[in-house]
Amino acid sequence: MADTIIIGIDAGTSIIKSVAFDAGGRQIASVALPNTYEILPGGGAEQDLGRTWADTAASLRQLAEKVPDLARRTVAVAVTGQGDGTWLIDGEGEPVGPAWLWLDARAAPTVEEIRASPDDRARFEKTATGLAACQQGAQLAHIGRHMPERLKGAATAFHCKDWLYFKLTGSRATDPSEGCFTFGDFRRRAYDDEVVGLLGLEGMRSLLPPIVDGTRQNAGLSPEAAAATGLKAGTPVALGYIDVVCTALGAGLFDRRATPGCTIIGSTGMNMRLVLSADQVELNDDATGYTMCMPAPGVFAQMQSSLAATLNIDWVLSLASDILRTQGIERGHDDLIGLIDGWVTAASPGALLYQPYISEAGERGPFVDGNARAGFVGISQQHGFGDLVRSVLEGLAFAVRDCYAAMGPLPQEIRLTGGAAKSPALRAMLGAVLGARTRTSRRVEAGAAGAAMIAAVSTGHYASMDECAAEWVDPMLGEVEDPDTALAQRYGKVFDAYVEARTALRPVWRSLASARKSI
Image 1 (cartoon, rainbow, N blue to C red):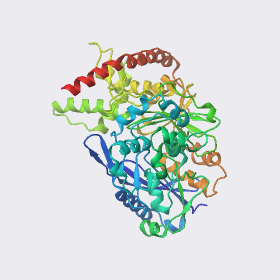
Image 2: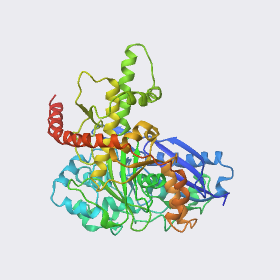
Image 3: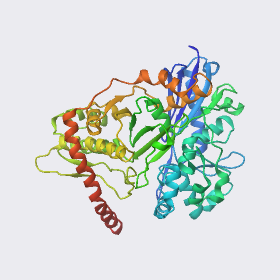
Image 4: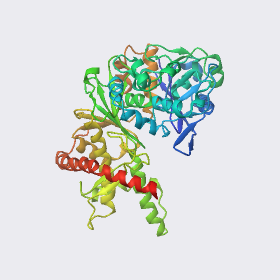
């Protein structure tokens, strides 16, 4: 067992990682290579399929340079990757044009039309997922209506990880998480023809590959992939779930006893609660959020996602950098990050409100509004820069609570991951705003680890995901941090004002968007 290696591949939007773990979940080595995509006029975001596979294969070859005798020692490989998007191939397995990424906004008008239909509620109740322009269902519907030539020759519609699994094994498949929240019935973990019809995709049903659960079956590495990667032909390869599920799995969401929440604080924010049965999934009136199958029977991750999380912090730090530069002082992003906790400590809690909708695409959770924009509420002459910084962090915490509140009762414990989770100040705010215990995962590569856990169960190293999580995840969780009760009471009152403000501002955002278009 000590000589055994399981490789997890995590193909993100901008970085592809291949990570080697031992059989007990300890990380041995990793390789990260930049991934490239192109932003197009009109909201397009595309990626070259061939380049993505070539970079993935290169990352595995480079991993072999770090790990002695990698090919012989590797007993399984698993792959996860960026979610949503549309990666089309033909009958021969060749790409049909570049992939549409989750960043692509071109399907937004089609999404508005479908969401406005009273029939969309039926789709939402089957998938338990709100429709968004990033999803493959919306993108295929838009392409079919407005760019049908893009479908010429297409035989299969993949997501990123599905494409890489195909290149590794020659098998056409997708996983239960992406297959069901886009086209299926989450309760049955299967495609649903009514959902396909409500999206107007009856004529494209043949594009959807079989749904394969990577914890139950795997395929052998093909000879062609073995030559490209340096691994042994026949090595078992498991198709992982979507990257957010794998990241949540690696960071500690899957714990039937604690039934925690899990928040990923990255450029975007993902907030998930563990649901132990389909009957416990709570559907909101706004038809927003995602419900994704977890790699265990009958277990789900219900989630709400914010378009901008740490992007708000990046903005306020860039503002500070610009001001300092006018005085001839150069301070980089990392230098300013180190000053945040000092600014926050010196400022009063809840002095201002900040709406953290800094993304040009608006917001998608727990409400959908492409016109939403960031802003401060309550500034007076007594407030300084430290107050602005603190309110930005508090705004992130309020947005997290806003997302959890749309999914039902607030979890009593939240597991945190992502770069910003290292900030003691932000952790304290999150705990107080949510009134919940927090624990931070020390796992560096949670997404790759979650994928590797799927492979470990698939190949029989563990009898269940529960056993695997106990060994791979629990030892990586930090100490419990209890919420500050006095601060929690104060934030409880401020949160009500936060929700009132974002509700009241929606017509203002709409008017501003109209004014911008007319200028």
